[in-house]
Image (cartoon, protein in one colour):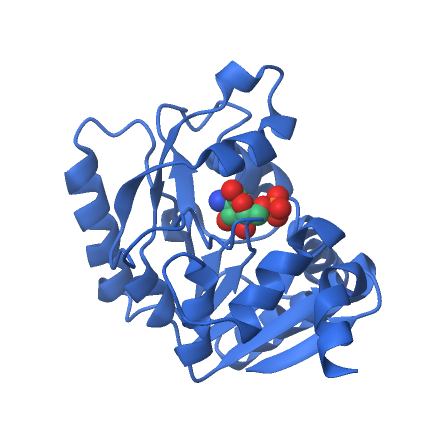
Length: 246
Ligand SMILES: N[C@@H]1[C@@H](O)[C@H](O)[C@@H](COP(=O)(O)O)O[C@@H]1O
């Protein structure tokens, strides 16, 4: 694991964008695993700027998002479809047919999950997976559990996650209670992983993910077993880490 402590959110985002840009430059037809949430927002802005000002080319890239809420259509502004279109896809030249996000409105969820995994495998797996982390240590929507869920699956969201994500909704009761998430095995099969953490409220989760025991109670802890993980932690999220290594 390479651990980088960034001096602020801007620094974290620039470093993350440089890694994504490097991946796409070296392999234009890269399969990118993408994340939502507040954490990667500025990274997407930086990538859009690199596209517009320096010609960073996504025309051959394929993308697979980690997760989507169940019951929200792609036009719902709380959906991760909307987030990705609004914050990234509408501003770069990723081809629409190369974009994959689980369908939160699928009639047959089991089938949707199986198909999603089949498509990822069909593309040769993920080259670079971007991850944020939940305050409870979740990655994607893989919530703390007694076991690691391997493949794409339906998840019942933890109260902590629903509460954390309620800041994006007008009413707490509007927050979906279920989601579809890529599984841990799929994430772990990515050739490279980039984990980002920003904000003091992530300090405990990121510390336990990196230095704690490997346990499904902190799903991100499984990343300790991956051979190519870069963790970029903004200073306030790294406060427990700095105390530990000082
Ligand atoms: N499903 C997403 C995750 O993919 C994200 O990494 C995490 C942290 O979100 P944020 O970056 O907004 O703190 O929680 C969300 O619920």
